[in-house]
Amino acid sequence: MPFDAALAELQSVVGRLEAGGLPLEASIVLYERGVALHDHCARLLGDAELRVQRLLEQASGALRTLDLTTDDVTEG
Image (cartoon, rainbow, N blue to C red; front, side, top):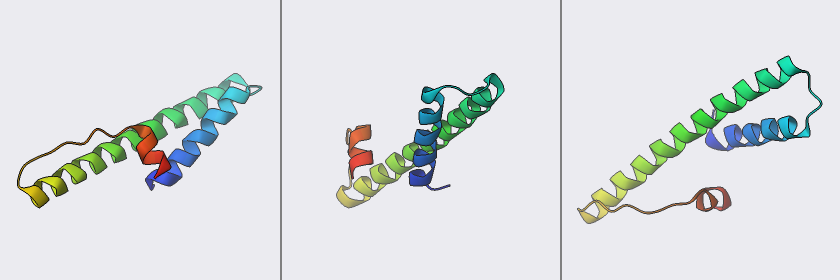
């Protein structure tokens, strides 16, 4: 699942959980889905960061790291 789709689904899951009113079992299933989506997004972001680091290394011959915030990723 692409990052954007996973993030959108995660946001939907969080919204549904925050709204409340769900039976306990449904809330647990949604929470489990949210955890899985969070892990998936975190893995994709980690992979992307590694790719960027490798590109920077190839471009300059020396490894540089950039500090990126989640705002940089979601806004761009």
